[in-house]
Length: 395
Image (cartoon, rainbow, N blue to C red; front, side, top):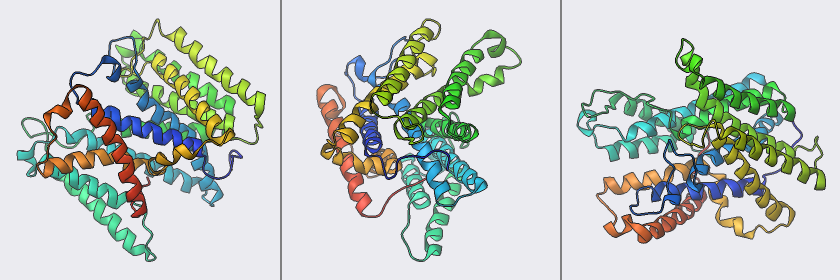
């Protein structure tokens, strides 16, 4: 074991994850609605601002960081040795990268060159994802491996037949890694850091500073425009990793029994951490304006600070005051996040494949916003049913 963490599932973390996924579904849907106010849209790359929409992705990163200590220590408690643990981490990273690349390339698919429609290709892709990463409960383990093998084979075939671009001559490749791929890189680096420093808060805090520093150095002309420009390729990943590490550090403050932070000591530590993030973000902002697209330090630090505040409120309500009945709605998504993440796309491409569209009125203004709220809630209810049906994805 690396840290002595609280036993059992932490309901406040599940609630935070479920709420984040619900908001994610809403903002992804409302992005296609015309005539909505600016505060419901992503800020443009060169604007010095952020909206609540721009906090959704870093909230995912933050929650990944909160979960890493529990996941690593759980596998060690189950008897994994060092190399088995690294195999699991690499497999999970590979899964996130593969999913990210497939999802990014879906929008650029050329139906004529590929031989099938974009909708059919996407539906088959998501079917293969479910086959590969579903948690099977068969008594015969070979049957589960048959399903997983079929899914892997399907992904290989879909990758081989894929052609993209207007000319239909491009192959499946990482144009960029996609949201899941970016999470995958940050997850990998954070797992390495967590193990290297043996879960020590000081080491993790130091690496938050190092990650931000790496981004800053890579923006200097002698790096960006010189022979070391290749280093800039990891600047965004370093920034994202800093957010993951902030989530990891908060988990240790709240749940590492060896630290023994309770009552006023816990409040002081968390409040101090929040203040450091806010002050650092304000200090970085003149040189590096707030921008999600450019993954600037000010955006990372402000986003992490917001996550610290939101989780602390949830922790107080759920784990301290035990006001938790309202979280029932979010729990299915929180316990099955990957399926919840891909489910809206499955529904969207399924409708496209069947030739079903929405009325034009649902693509504009207030009716469109109301529809997106309903759609997000419907996805969480659908996940609840799929959970009961035994469809639960796990990387």
